[in-house]
Image (cartoon, rainbow, N blue to C red; front, top):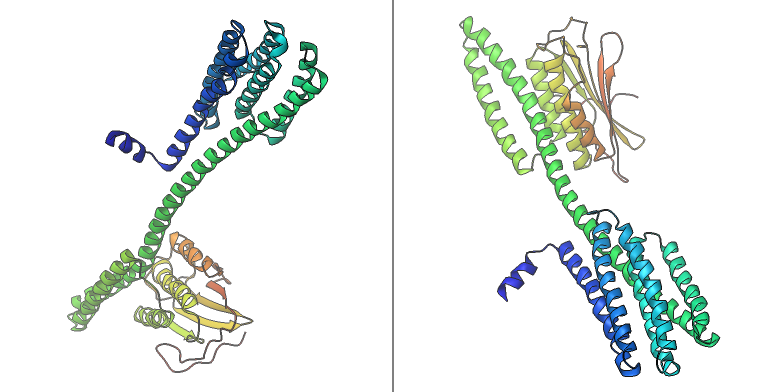
Amino acid sequence: MGGRDGWWRGKSTPAKVETYTRWSFHTFPFVEVAAFALPAFGYVPAPVNWFLFLLVSAHAALGAVTASLTLDWTRGRRPLPVRLLWALGTATVVIAVVSLVVALHGPRGADNGAAAGTVFVGVLSFGIGTLALAVRETRRMVYGVLAAALGAGAVAVPAGVPAPGAAVAAGAVVLAAGFFTFTSAFSVWMLNAVYELDEARETRARLAVAEERLRFGRDLHDVMGRNLAVVALKSELAVQLARRGRPEAVEQMIEVQRIARETQREVREVVRGYREADLRTELAGAQGVLTAAGIDCEVSGPVTGLPAEIQSALGWVVREATTNVLRHGDAGRCAVSLRVAEGRVTLTVENDGAPGTGSGSGTGPAAAEPGRGSGLAGLRERLREVDGVLRAGPAGSDLFRLTAEVPLPPASAPVPAPAPGGSPRPSPTP
């Protein structure tokens, strides 16, 4: 008993539904024999009763095999058993007609009308219901049921059934075959729906894993990119100072140590998924880092009062833009401006370190083109989360401009505040 329970518990939900569906169809042959073949022994004399029993049993067995293989086809596990379906369709018509004729024209045929009609309708109904498993369109199923009903009425009259009885038989076929056809169609639909839901759940789980990997990679790039650039800059400065015997080299290495510890903390936050960028902090950090690199940095615009999610997204933009100025250009000046107008926040970072100028004092390699790489792609993903857009490209012969625009939610009004790292500055005029 425990083994059977374990076998059932070990199945997935779709597998359980499929097992239930298959065994439901596997019980149909027993229902067909019990409902239409066995009663013949009580109403039809021998040997006609045995003949009807064998015919119905053969039809039920063929229907069970066809149903099993056709269910495999609905799940895409095997080709459609076309020959078997044709065999079942032919057997359904032949067995139904032969059973009707033999029952009506055999011994005591006048007394076998009810039994003959029952077998006739039952065989047709089960056959049509099984064949419906191979049909995908509802309209074709309806046509099949109606065609079977019309055919039953058309065959019953020549076989010796009175016209009223033929009409009753046709109506019974519509009801019974329609019920079994609906059962087949609904079973296949439910089975496919359960599998699709399970596949969707697995896909969602895989997407969640992929999204988390992308988040981790994006955050790690954004956190490590600027910090490593600053570490490289300050280490180079410390080396130059040490070669000249200047005591400031120690201060620079202490700063490198502090940045390394800060980076270590931020990486832990990235791993835990708690890393958020603060716009004011990032603006102050950008101004300090760029100034230390010999780049004149000016920051202007309101900071406070913006929604937290917008501040976080724009904070990442400032961080990535600062990294690009340090690493990918030879800038001497960088201007960061924040403007709020017409329900939108616009952050602009502009520097004169575009390739080919060569006039700045930055330390990054001038051969690298700004705006390329995975950093800006990650920024676009972050801005999309707040319905923002990012534009980056040359702005004249010697300027490179990065612009991020984010719509403000209703009733959001930023409060002017002093620019980070300096005295209050007015917002630039559009």
